[in-house]
Length: 277
Image (cartoon, rainbow, N blue to C red; front, side, top):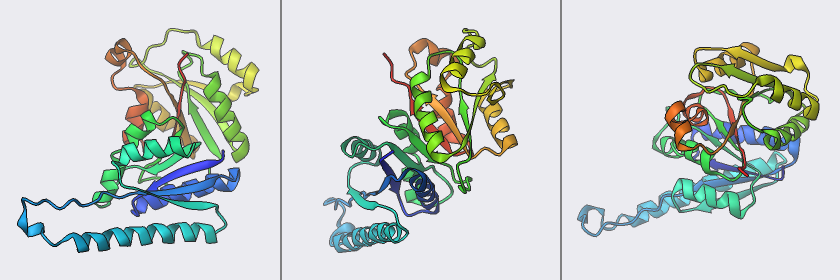
């Protein structure tokens, strides 16, 4: 991992996201691109009460630039390779553009909490970015207390070939020196067509994962089962694999597990993307 993009809005939760990115940078040596997306003020000529207010908004822009600079300087003083990124596009387009232009290996961002307007604005984009980015995305919810990444749970369906994603996850696990558990939740809300034994045998052979670290449990809902298990073992991170879904899958399974988790889970969530052949 060489580059981590960290969108911030200077809220408390984006500070948590930056702290999580620093933990990952400690283990991987990645540089941090700390990014702020400014929403520029456009004076509306039809509203005379706004006339002459641009200097105020210039001051506001200057204050945000100063905050970004201070955040980057602080990271550098702590020993991180950090750079500032300033954008003025819409939040989601700007972040997606920067992931491509800077060849980011990971995006780390906070999700909507109980903060101010900017926190809600950037947090509301987290789900779309997680689903559309070309690289993995780590979403840090407001409840999370990021101390370390030692116990990591990978949510698998054992229904399709996930080897490419598992290779990436295994590489990250080695860098973090963490423990990985593969977890499948059986629930009536999710299709279960392929025999689990086939995929379990392949995974054990390719990745040398002990049988006790591949767990299959039943629950009323997949999301509830995942969260209950992670809470039970005090997992630091939940990893999911997102893939394109056709119309029938959406009809049968709703909006998708990744979207539900990215919106609602109280766990730090790392989203990988399965490249379709």
